[in-house]
Amino acid sequence: MNLPAMKRQMPHGDQVIDETDRRIIIATQAGLPVTKRPYHDLALQLGLEANEVMARMQKMIQDGVIRRIGVVPNHYALGYTANAMSVWDVPDEKITELGERVGQLDFVSHCYQRPRHLPSWPFNLFAMVHGKSTAAVEEKIREIENVLGEDNRGNALLYSKRILKKTGLRLT
Image (cartoon, rainbow, N blue to C red):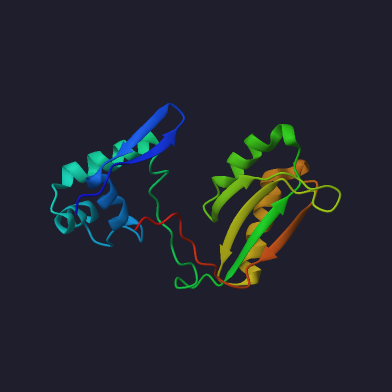
């Protein structure tokens, strides 16, 4: 199939995605193969050399066509059924430093800043915590409280009630 090159507006001009890049994107939308050599297996599937697949994916990351490649575990399947978003009210001038410290904790899967919505929502630092029980999550929350110390001006714990499907843009 001969697909036209796609253009994506990038901060420094247009980037062209050719037919091969498009095939790689479509083949990886649902994830890389869960094998010892995923790029080699993907290359075999696409009729390409593994080095070409890796080089093209690296270039697409550098150009901003692909934002990132990462592992997305199913926490429930791993036994982590008590999952909670912890939200924190910390001084805005310290949020970068505090966010980095909280984000480095091995039990925090992601940590980020969000705007406050005063007066009802004073929280500006969010950190996702996973545990096998609510007691385990609450113990981890106490560790975050210790990291934040006197900069913790309040927090709340929001437990997940269901799993939402996590997918990005899909090409067809």
